[in-house]
Amino acid sequence: MNLPEAGLKNLLETLPALRNPTVSPLAQPGWVAIETVIEEKIVREIIPSLKSLGAEGIIEYPLNKVVH
Image 1 (cartoon, helix red, strand yellow):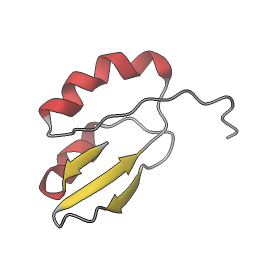
Image 2 (cartoon, one colour):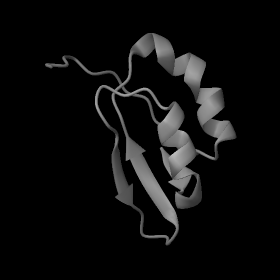
Image 3 (cartoon, rainbow, N blue to C red):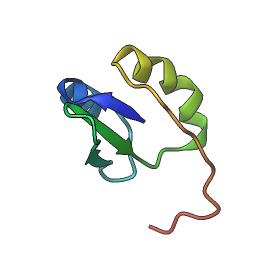
């Protein structure tokens, strides 16, 4: 997902993740891309919260295997 950098702290406080999400700067200043691994059953519940925190371009795709 993409998010204005100003909202990153709030998003990280509420975002479930296997460990910590990957946060990368975007070409547009002030924006970041966030990648994370979360349980499939949580995705549908959390998307409205992510959008309310300013996230956009949210992409969900399945993983075949997660090895801890």
